Length: 606
Image (tube, rainbow, N blue to C red; front, side, top):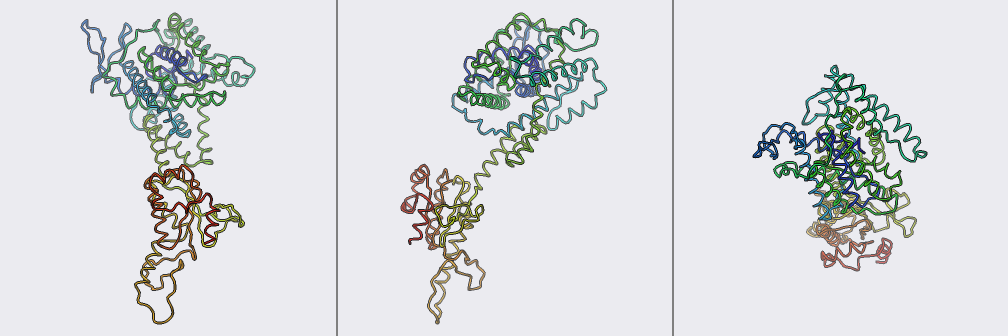
């Protein structure tokens, strides 16, 4: 907990101590207000990365406002100001101003969502979208830490392709690698990886408690750095000054809130999505419930408190939650204990870590993200199981990698919503046939034994009937029944307008009328002898006014063409909706049947 909190602060472009502030208050607030018993809420890599991205953009626009005594005690955000220098004496730096402003707005949005009972919003973030987003974001995290691992001082890239351009910079400057920092970082990665993969994972059933290798490596690296003067002799960058105590609460300047609001909303949604998914996962496993709206309240209050004490936004961590669950943590007491340990470091033990090489924290982050490599197997699995989810994963991932983390998420959500709209508009329809002369009716394309009932066509529309697909519904009915009522009526009127032939009696119009006048004007050619069309409503879960009008219009057009339309499997809720929309003022209730078979029997008796 302590090493990761300090490491993730670097991702947020803050000093490591701010990670401890965020960890302490997030754990404490969630323990009091959260509903998940196993979720461990503290700084996580993705949220820290997103916060750091906002800091990179807006910190250069922050300038200090001189107070009466000449000290920079107030701050403002300008349109073209330069970044303020780091203040001494515990004053807030430009980076802290932006990070706390983002965190404050995250808390405001989460509280507002909780108050409005919007805990359901995460259902629009599919697993494929979240995995694509996380996989792409991990590349940014690893890239930012590789620069530290190699000891390279590179300019920050912005805009599209900044990830690729950053790697170009890395390879262009690879000759300037700081060997000492690379050795320290590589050794730390090796030890962390070996213990986590070959000890903690392999012997997790025998170990009552996983070996806290992160903490051990941090302590060992600090001791070695102090003993052999890594900073003085080898030029290894260390943490240096770590303040003790908890800072006085202080809100970010009001002028800093509005500019970061859009980014903060994205972070608020991602933070909630991560927390609720982990919380629900453990709730299903242990048989208890998680209240999504209460989770928003807990996260929102935690963000507000953390921002007031110079922390940054947090979320539930999967790896820490696993540890908490493996320790048989059945309540949030485990989080309180973890917060107490962090408090000890804040109040007394912080200065003992001043000799810790910064590259060790980079190693902690890189190893913590090792399991995300498994996500690259997801596209192949999705391709086999769901092409829609595959494309959602790919679009989200590509958006994150090519453009930016925030815009990648927006692209993924937009693509998912577009796919949802397309699927709603182009719902599948099927022609049903009777199986072996019984009361079972199946899709004729899927079941070879299903055959048409003479004179009857059964159409099942598989989706909501609404404004987006009302016209398509009418078209699909015509295609599947083989009966175009408009063409039948046109042919009938044309024949009625023709002068009577002197020979032979008039032949009654039937559904096998042909374009016998040879004018090629589209006289109808349809399925012979069709006299009844049954609309199977069993999969029609919802209908709006446009859908009800389309259904009534189809029935009226077929009725004018001499074909009766009946409804079957009309569920109670659907019937209520149709009643409210005055559908049954235009459609006879006696033409609604409980099942397809009842409707077919009625047709055969006529």
